[in-house]
Amino acid sequence: RHDRMVQSAITSGNVRRAYLKGLGEARGCNPPATPQHKPPAPIPVVDPGMPPPVEGFKPRFPIKN
Image (cartoon, rainbow, N blue to C red; front, top):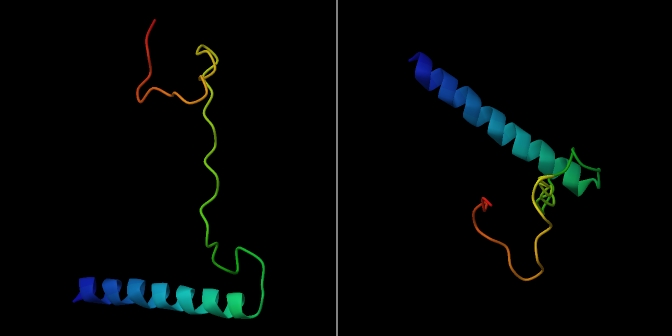
């Protein structure tokens, strides 16, 4: 019984959040009040011991010298 109550609360929270995001978007609010429709750009990871990658080729796994 408790599990059903918890699941119901989680679902209700998700529905409420989606509703409020839609209201914020309809009223022209800025993020985070509105959903961001495109994912943020990934942060480039730079290892100081590795040379910069060659354009057009990037290994799938780290290379040990």
